[in-house]
Image (tube, rainbow, N blue to C red; front, side):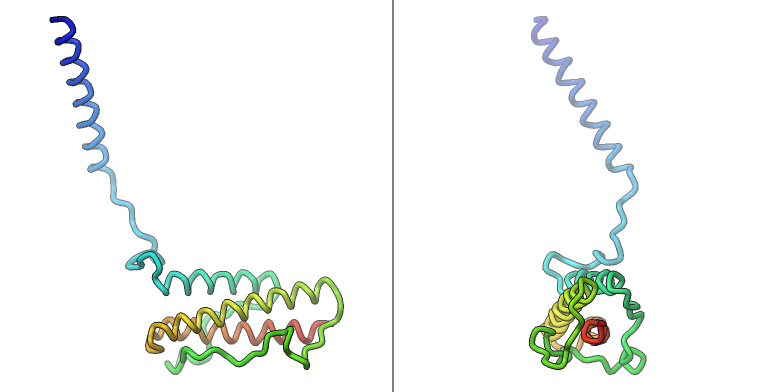
Amino acid sequence: MRAILAGAGVAFVAGVIAACSASKMSAAAPVAASPQSAGSMPGDPHTEIDRLSKEIDDELAKAGVATMQQPSCAAAGTCSAVPMAVAPIAQDATCKPAKSDTCDQACTLSTSICTNADRICKLAGDLGGADQYANEKCQSGNESCSRSHERCCGCT
């Protein structure tokens, strides 16, 4: 009989703990979604575009190049999903940076920026080329690529 009562007591305590935990969880304030994650799902092209765009901004800062606030085409609403035709530094015969660690770093960052810009433009194209946000990020990436390419090639 004691074993039955002890078992019933343990079950009762466990039930009370579970009930209290559930009420605390339901009473807690809901967690707000971050602006970037709101409406985005795993594999969402906008999430990938935002990640690549942030990498470009970080790399521009490392290279000492000002980040873009808005691409030049944004005000007119004429941004497209077409990547710029900037030759990779390794294939650009006109690009002759000085042989130094500073120039090597500037050129490595430029290559990374241009690779990310190209990827953003491909994602914008995958969205049909009609997604204004993606197109603006594409063009912003293109302009960042161009500026970082100039910085690399003009490095002395």
